Image (cartoon, rainbow, N blue to C red; front, side, top):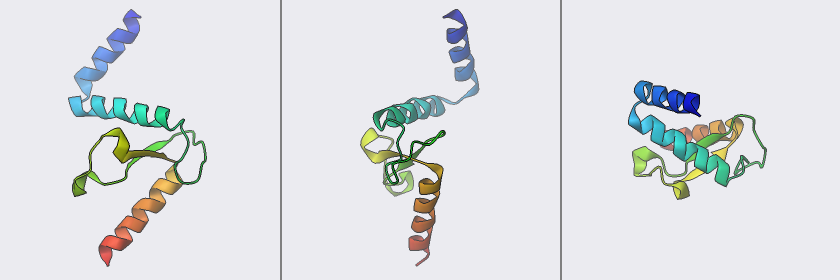
Length: 87
């Protein structure tokens, strides 16, 4: 227990506060979605979390704006978004 607490305190000294908060939110989203990609249904080894409405467009880090995706689907979404913005 003491070593876990020491590790957590060490992380806080290295990471800025928003990174610690994002880590917690990310874990909550993946847990909520059972680690399953919201598009293809795969259960990736390293799930990613996607903002449905990007932060740059007024989206938030609230759970309802986030979805778990596999890497392939996440990349596909961002390519599609880039293509739309180019037009």
